[in-house]
Image (cartoon, rainbow, N blue to C red):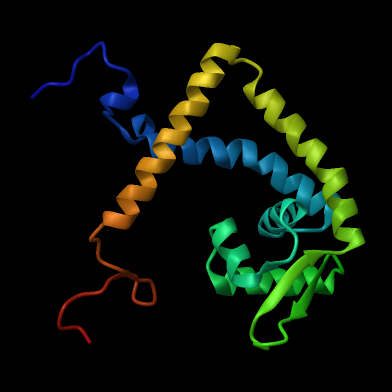
Length: 177
């Protein structure tokens, strides 16, 4: 079956440069590098730390497990980032009274100040990135991204894929222990 030559490139990928996830990854890498430079060079935090600060700015007092889920990070990475942010006095961690393993995370005044300074700069990058796209097309992109996110969530829920074993540089093989 031949692909329709009039179909958009995304509907008939011929090379890696035509694959949606690769194109999105390249866009994130290029435009995201400006945010990374702002975070690291201007504010002394990592991109991961920025993500946690931005989430906490709108939802204070999350459990560390909730923060990991919202940030779409594993709990170990979230814990390391929170520990770093506590050391930088940008967040505070409060142990639960019923369960000492449970910790609520909230911004400190310094964390709130950092957010208030950095967020407008991130918004400016966002505005400049979207500037060449007309409003009607932007609305369509927004709706399409929402639909793709729902589809991706469904695909992950229903996927039956092998787990990676990164310690061995490949997937888990039957009979290899």
